[in-house]
Length: 355
Image (cartoon, rainbow, N blue to C red; front, side, top):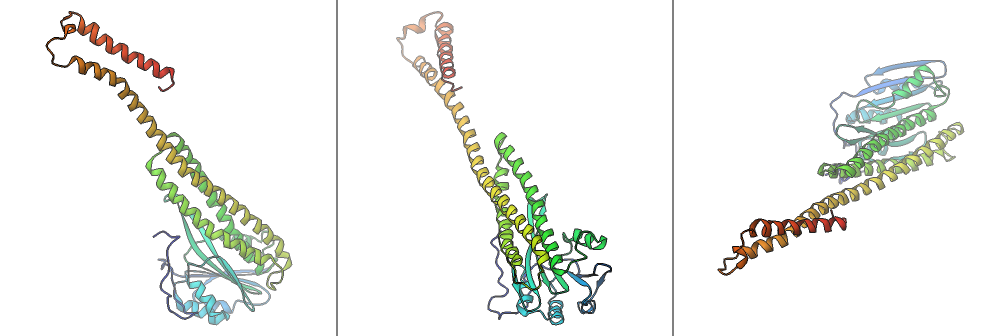
């Protein structure tokens, strides 16, 4: 079963809000890191328990809590009880097959994203769910595995680059989503290079391996499309006025981010058309090669048809065949006639541009 068609059956028949982790259990330990900052101060550390994060939140600073590894259901329950998060939100965090979406609650927003990375060796796009919960002065990001693409955001906070230390958690949420979207651009660049390489191979020398690569690319484009199209709607909802947690100063950045998602969608659609065309190109190239082989074999068979006829006539065992008694019939009668007929047919085929 491909990743695009897999189904989760662990939650069938259970009541809403039941906490069951549906993803793959990572080998790494759960890691909780906290960055507490404002324009003048910065505190960064790792904690062992989720309860330790609550004491770090205050009204004078912004607190970013990043959790890597969500397979511990007890930890998620403590997260919900500590920060007053709705059980349906906790359920969606643990159900790692969610599509990108945004839900607004009384004092926080819940956003689901798909963080994608490209495996160059296997030519495969790896997908990971990222959940964001942010309120007035805190943001919680939850990831399935250790390691992410948010190092650039962390460096901007540490070095106080840009406006991230001056603005609130709504801008931090934008920065994290923007990092995810930038990752899409990197993936599309690598896929574009792969598409160009395969196109060159299809034109020069198509191979059966190309067909497997084309089908794999089609699956990856479907995965990209499923990740980006809903994200466009999420950003569109965020940039509309009426959400109290998002300040007006952040709207201009969200509009720019929305344009980036449109650009990514256009690129994905272009690559989808190119990959579909590559399949037709492969089939056409294979068919043309087969036609060339059949043409050569047909020409050879056509040349030998009259020669076979002459050899068959002179090979008959009749007693009275007067030409068989001629002294030069073999070299000048048989071989000269054979060469003359074959040469005339080759000359005729070249005149017709069949050779």
